[in-house]
Image (cartoon, rainbow, N blue to C red; front, side, top):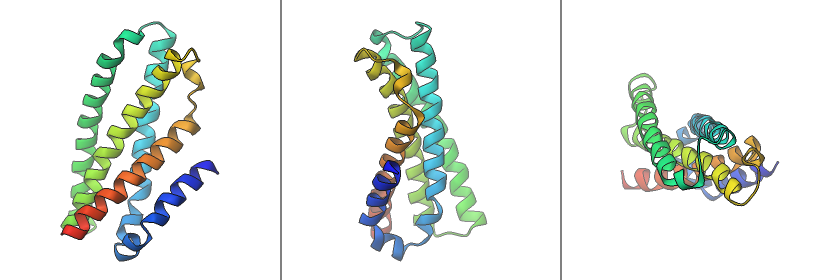
Length: 160
């Protein structure tokens, strides 16, 4: 219910954009799903490393740099496939394909950063990293992903 409130408020802010470019709505599950998967994978890896003592507080920057690099690699690969699918199979307009694909890279990047940072911040605060639940992560990742998606789409589609 909390997630629906946050994401609902974000969607409401961009109602006129969604009305003008209805196809933006179709990409929402792709973006939130990809972001959620990437964030939860990152979180699980970090929680495991912290629990087993493989990751220490001093490793924060190294671990974050690795997650960012993985996010960019994965995000660009997903965006390339998505762009081709949208443009050649779905026959969407080039600016829309570009907007969704850039948002996909951003979603994976945001998710990996949040999924990495929250367990490490919890540990640093003296809490168990596993307290950073899937629900909290996906809510935060979904809200950030949608905010970035609609902001990017507004810029890209109103310029094009």
